[in-house]
Length: 135
Ligand code: FES
Image (cartoon, rainbow, N blue to C red; front, side):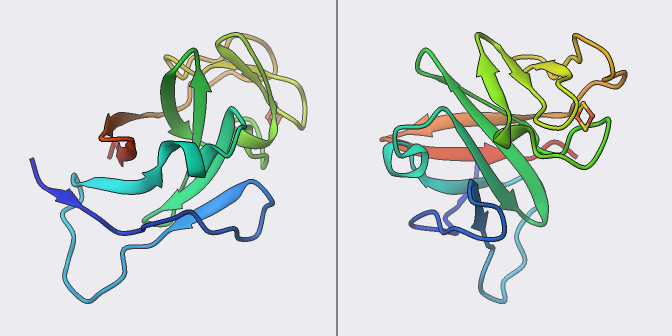
């Protein structure tokens, strides 16, 4: 497994809760490589929801009982970021129309969400959070 460190810390961008993880450098990065988001505690900074952009993909990260789940951040129903929603148990409530998504599976559990959300792999190594995008 090849790990590509691409960011040492989260940085804020367009949305208040959205950080950008940039690939940087000229060397090509394998599409299935693990991306370093940063140190878990400093990235979440006491919150349970975090939005990051990895290789131009907006990813929502949700921390529940010490586990972190990653899925596409853009709601499948409209143009809203799930990471700006409200986490209740294992469900994130979309901030725009209140549809619910199970962050463990990406499954939409209530109307108006009719399509599931793509999930991504997460791993924590030595306190650092890594994400591998599903393609
Ligand atoms: S945009 Fe998310 S439920 Fe409508």
